[in-house]
Image 1: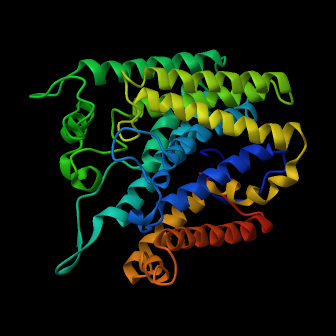
Image 2 (image 1 turned 135 degrees about the vertical axis):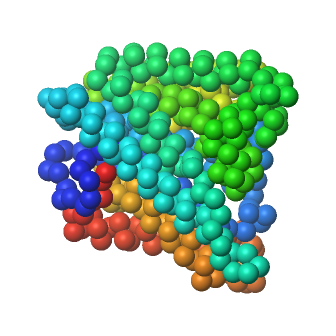
Length: 376
């Protein structure tokens, strides 16, 4: 996800893992689909984020992006083993800074430019967001990228234990520790308000779902993705090892569910249990695609996904700009509302979002045909 040269470059001529590109395509397609301003009240429950605790289909999507960034990092590093680590680190940090900057730019477009009674006005900039969280999580995984793979698991464990300890045992001023049922009374929200200021959090709500403290566990997720990528790099074309990895993933999901009574599964807090269940689900999905495409030889089933996967970051950014522009000119969510006059509102919402995803698939296909790929 965060590898390669700055700007648009020709495709490299090395062999690629089809399942890796296909998995990234599925993730970014789901992100585009879920981010679209649909008629949320008309959608079935499983397509809507829970209000606080819980885990539904949309909650798989963003963590899968971070997870795949970790997997991709392992493959990227394996192709550049001879590169000096210091030089590689400088380049990586530069790309991370650019990704964080892109996230700030998207936040300006999405959240700072607002419409009031007197027209457009600028609200304070939200500091954190999706791309910023991906950038920081990837940065936390980088120091482990050339170490033996067990160190990624050790690092992830330390980060999750540190995060859990703060959530469970540290109380904000005037509050209590382990207040995980409160959106604004928990220690994570307090840290965001203190460090960034309430006006710079998500829609001025006093907490940020991509806040600072949760970055510990999202960094752990990137490390678990790195571990899976290193596993695949070390044992390519090995069905037994792939099956073992699936077994580890299933055990990880069971562990998350077992710990949930003590540490709720919560995306907005990005609790350690949320990281564990996201890593487990992500690994099962990736191993299934790897098995079918790269082990069983059914690559043609997934080749149609490759163009979007190779430009995943570009199309996430473009889709956000597209939706904001649509809001300004009144296309979104008006298109879904208009269609709802002729069909069930849920179907209208899904149809508009699916149409946008198909549009980006066509654009991705054209860029792929011309061998144009955007990388940081």
